[in-house]
Length: 315
Image (tube, rainbow, N blue to C red; front, side, top):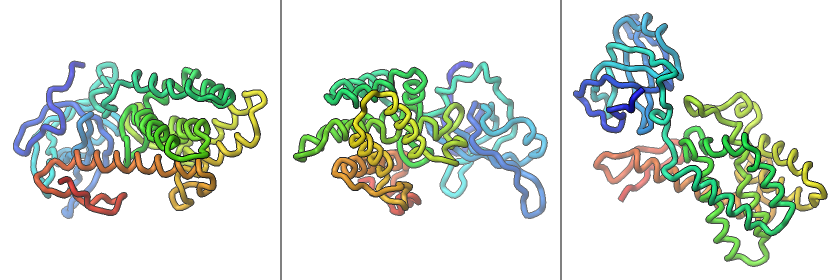
């Protein structure tokens, strides 16, 4: 399928639309008079938009499903200061004609360059067992492929293809500076833990058609998944020091900071404390920046951010 000619970010009220989009949500509803209509949430690499199908909703409901790419016809309207689509016709696009790069946002940086930069930090690790451990992770073709493509979250920060890699590399670059500032810090432990702190997210999310939790992600979560991955590879490194293994495990278990935010343990070493705060800093700065970018109206303030529980000043 040829590249899209119209993207969601460019759609204005009053315009006619005949374009393809990824369906991320779909539900059948009923008006106060009992007439059925269809709510859909549509996505491309530039954003998301709500759509309504008012006529023949039950028939259209059978024509496509969540995760499909559809060609939607209709018009853009303004509703409560946002743009919506009033859809009059739909055609499902055959999977063989779909280029998912048109529908899923991606990191701005080159994925292979970022991965090479991250591997350069691996080669700087002076502790042989830690460097060998990291090789076991990233010389594994499946792990490397998933790590390059995974988002860092479902909805909060770095929510795009390559987001996990971009976030991890940013965290490592910050940790590299922080470990130079403080005396007595085990730099190799900090960098290794920073590289691996979110490794479980490669299995926590699904990201082939849309960003969502996998069954493993919902039932177990990336902290425990990451710990299991870590333990399996530590066992494959002959003579891995038990004390170092314990401190590295603690760093993974505590990187969310508190039980309230999913950490089984609070940071109890300087290295774990540093990784927690740098991870939190990078996630929240990205969340601020992305939310500001999405709020493209003339106001000096964004709408209220529910997860951050605040308005953000755009300046």
